[in-house]
Length: 119
Image 1 (cartoon, rainbow, N blue to C red):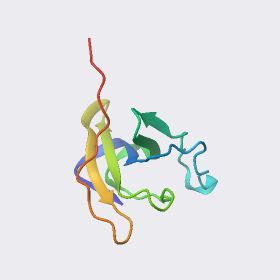
Image 2 (cartoon, rainbow, N blue to C red; image 1 turned 30 degrees about the vertical axis):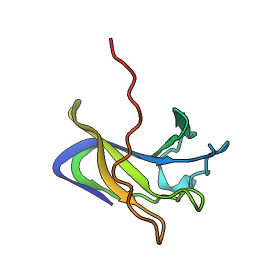
Image 3 (tube, rainbow, N blue to C red; image 1 turned 135 degrees about the vertical axis):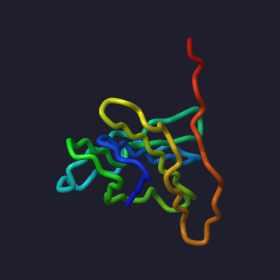
Image 4 (cartoon, rainbow, N blue to C red; image 1 turned 180 degrees about the vertical axis):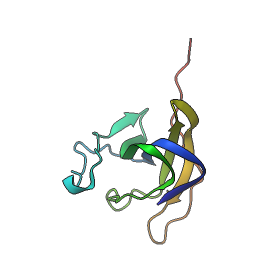
């Protein structure tokens, strides 16, 4: 469950982790949960990200619960980045919402993908 201090009507959760080898196929999502998972994408040579959950509703909320399947053993920590909207306005974008690490693993701090130049 991801919770916020403000109401939102749209929320996108992305999982971001580092990987020495990029996986060729995403883990298929359970169809019954009502959200989609898109294929993993590579950022540079070590970042992997995939959409974990997305939610849009006419009724504002302050939390979203979802089921998540961890990447393969040895991946390390996964950072969950959140982007939220309310009535078409972006409240926050790519905010670190949660970090989960394998048992016995240590937190690596926030991972962020490299940003392209704008303009």
